[in-house]
Length: 490
Ligand code: C2O
Ligand code: CU
Ligand code: CU
Image (tube, rainbow, N blue to C red; front, side, top):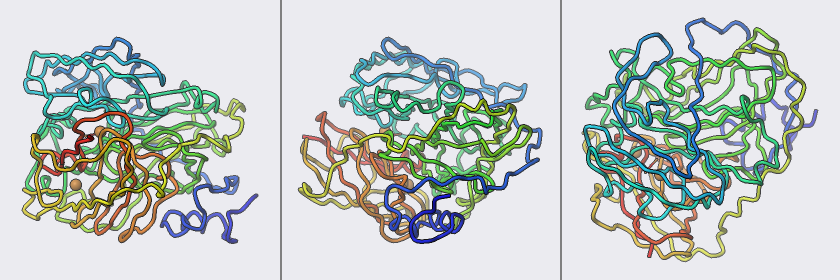
């Protein structure tokens, strides 16, 4: 079995990698090691879990999304009142090829204003779903944009100001998957072995898990629940074969930071993140996933026998608490994988090289900008550079085609997942806090987790469209309460 550099055995390497200490030494590419020494976990199946359901697909050439009240099952026999896209939770998965032209009509049948944003897609200003383009009940909005970005796991959700958290809580979010020829050629697991997983946490004591009634503390910390949902299913389970699977995981929660790991150290082979495939796979024992972020990973179930099961969990981590009932960093069991079929022996190799992300480099940096994220303990103020969002004010101007260094400083004791519309960025450094850029944060990102006391430095270059694009914290309460600004690309 091959070992990572530095003479560490695999297990201590994985532990170091999880703590971030090994990331610098190992660089962006970690030698994949065999996992035949991995013990398996048996008997965690508790029988209370319901089957994860895949959202149905729809092409984007002439698509309609109807946002309307409806009802959704959470895996039991009861139906709960929810707000849905096309009656589905998650909303219908939009599938596009690079080079397609998307023509999507949004119909608002909700009792309040709404607008849809395509999170991670590079689109013209008027197709971006800026809150100022919100439409009234009964109205519609037509989106037209070419699919110009890399293959990847993107998503969509509503984005009306002050209403994003409530609308996502009620069910208005879905996947937007882009594929291309480069990705096809890799022969990654597909069909039933490509699993989309939208993670949300909800409170166990709500009569209807889709109701939205945040408390004062929720307005400070963001809404945190104790019960994991996957694709709208409470405590989901997936029956699998002992093969390699591709798991595309989206954090569509309000505030929850997940630290994904498989039970008993089975490794995660990370192949992509927000902006598509990495240059090469990296093996990690755990991965932080802030709100809005995605991770695309392979998991190899070959060591498991029929009848066994493993858990995709969120591991505990240390972080300041602020009186939350269900604090950040609490452990959660997210998805149980039950081995129901033996391997068909057709997994092949994990590709050694995946893509050429073509990220910007530091040579061309024209300016540096600083963004200070602050939250006041009264919970009423979540600010960027001391200011709450004003939809009509332009806060920063940047020229098309120019590369800049932006630094996000977290001046609070809460995590802030920072998200930019209009272009992805490249993460260059993280200082304070975890003090590391993880190998799974390489390539293109559109959201970066800035934990308490951290500064994250990114390179930004808008290349395609002029116009006004939001920069905001993706904690949904923070976003709704004003931790957002307008960036104008000139
Ligand atoms: Cu996922 Cu501005 O949002
Ligand atoms: Cu976005
Ligand atoms: Cu925040």
